[in-house]
Image (tube, rainbow, N blue to C red; front, side, top):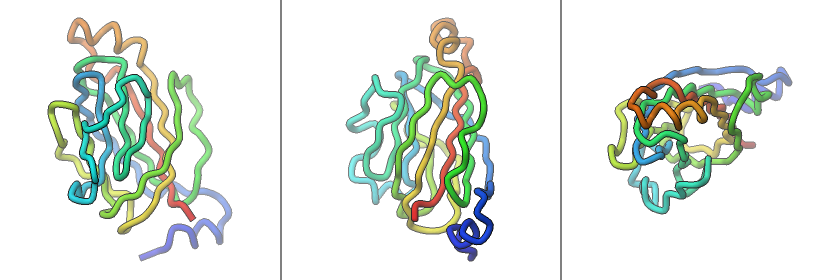
Length: 164
């Protein structure tokens, strides 16, 4: 296995390792990314969910407040070998955090719907990751989700990179 930090050290330029798009079911204005091995997460989602915070962190998980009540959001996951530049765009929200994953994988969770089937592989085993998350479509999804027309409107991009 290639050590991502060594690759970065040699080249000096962040390199995109993996990109994945997954649908995220949002309910009750929330969803989370949680370690695939939820036995390693002290409080699983939605425990201690902070509804009014765009991004909040808990051991083994990242919680997100959505602007829409019930809809399917689009999530693009980017795994980098070092901290990348923020992508251009008109982002309505942006936040950074860290997450430790015991499995090296994540899974999206809905508030009431629970875990979703898609596996998000961050490359490798147990590790601490930096993450930057941006979102667009929040104003529009707030209006449209009340009419049930909001699928795909709210779009998230999450950039992950290994911490040294």
